Image (cartoon, rainbow, N blue to C red; front, top):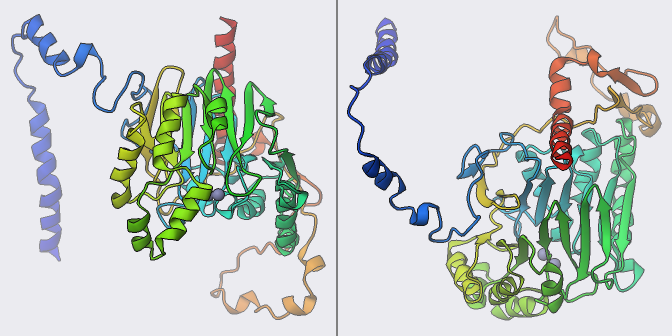
Length: 479
Ligand SMILES: [Zn+2]
Ligand SMILES: [Zn+2]
């Protein structure tokens, strides 16, 4: 035992000792190299004195405020006042651990954020990216294939539970050819499906959490403006995706533009409405029907038929990008596999020679300002902590709405009576203070001064950042 301790001490202390002696002797001062030598060495390999080589293009470079130019670590960087940050929270139609169903998160420097599609499983990536579920309130759905909205029921229920009490969920989505195929009907159906869950969760604070505002627009109204608030504009147009009621979206803010086409065949309308957009994102499928079918174990005609009636061939995506000429072209809704990736790039490059990245696998993040854009891999942990729910403390208080029901109202006494007496399983001398009924009458209103520092700091973090950015934006616009 003693010998072991000694070994550990040596193992720890000896390297420390060596390091400290290494630092105690600074290297000797030497005569500086000539100015020409220094200049030649420090600018050598950088053509014309700036980075523009390989796949990097003018304006495609990391911003100075990024903590790492290679990776994004959630929670370590704030969105800058002038910046648009776009994160791929789900990137494939086939759900699997590294690729959830499609969802794109857009955060703006003015503090607004938007969700474009909310595919199954994407919630896990929002949590890993340190987004509190009650921050997700404005959602645009491109169409009603379940790989584009499958996470909505979870977000609706648990986003409310996790502090989504003070703001409605607002969902934008296309009409169908007839009302039963529109976004409104989907939401009504979802509410019906969640009848039990909603009533069960009404023993918790709900507030406005169960209200959903659905803004269903006519899918035929190409170019129609559906969102115009706080300097942010969103328009939509129809996409050819086998069935009527599929749309593409374009968001404009602060002289920058983001497009997510959703699924569909390449169309002239994409060129018309996405033309010149800074960040153009579409979906694609490479021409590997036979190999892909072998890998997936399905007959090739099924893949061929699916693509030719629903999707954008990779060649066409490059063709579109070359017409639209974005500052950054990205594709998502694609399997990220070695046997597909090389082919995908080759096919895109047939027509498009400009900046191009995959919006896959999950966690790829894009930082964009008016003159710079940079794409990185985000590091999403498998077992993250959830971010604290985020609240607006403008009124100096935290308000927790009173639950609209209680256990007594929704559970028969004979069910509860079968519960085992806690004294039987807690150890002798230990009994927590059980909270079997909601602890207050009416809404709980807590002045922020009365909150523990840690709660106030964590739950007001997004609000404080928004104020800070708005102040900077205002002072910029005054100048
Ligand atoms: Zn899809
Ligand atoms: Zn689809």
